[in-house]
Structures are given as C-alpha cells and as structure tokens.
Image 1 (cartoon, rainbow, N blue to C red):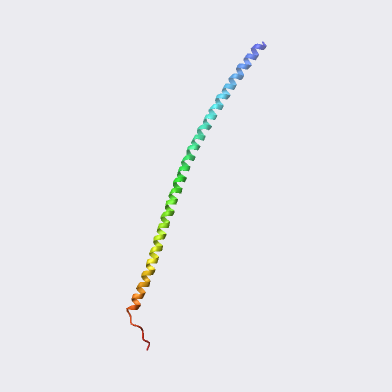
Image 2 (cartoon, rainbow, N blue to C red; image 1 turned 180 degrees about the vertical axis):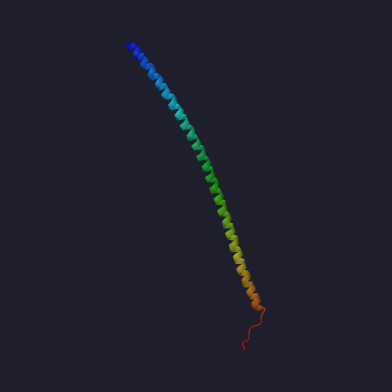
Length: 98
C-alpha cells in the first residue's frame, strides 16, 4: 500500500509541478514580451532625442547666422546714417547768427 501512495503522491506532485512550470513559463514569456516592447519604445525615444538635438544644433547655427546678418546690417545703417548727416550738413551754408 505504501508503494501505491508513494506513486500516487509522485504523480500528483509531478502534475502540479508541471502545471506550475507551464504557468511560470507563460508569465515569463509575457514579461519578456513587455521588456521587448519597452526596449523598442526606448529605442524610438533615443532616436527622437537624437533628431531633436540635431535640429536644435541646426537652429542654433541659423540663429547665429541671422544675428551676424543683423549685426552687419546695423553697422551698415550706422555708417549710412553717418554719411547722410555729413551730406545733409554739407549742403547747408553755415548759420550766421544775427
């Protein structure tokens, strides 16, 4: 009788263990799938961050160019104003107070 109980207990435990093992493997596979999805999302986020950094660098370069052009225009306008004043003053006779 002891042999039968031992065999029945062994079969019962084997069945329970195999059920537990299969459920554990299913859960583990689901966790792996979730990690894969997270890895894919992180990869996309990294690419987007890289694209944003590249875009920011390009914008900074454009801003510097615009600032340089504005500085150049400001210098030209200042010089033009200086010339215009000289021409304007040179066209009038001196004021003789009287």
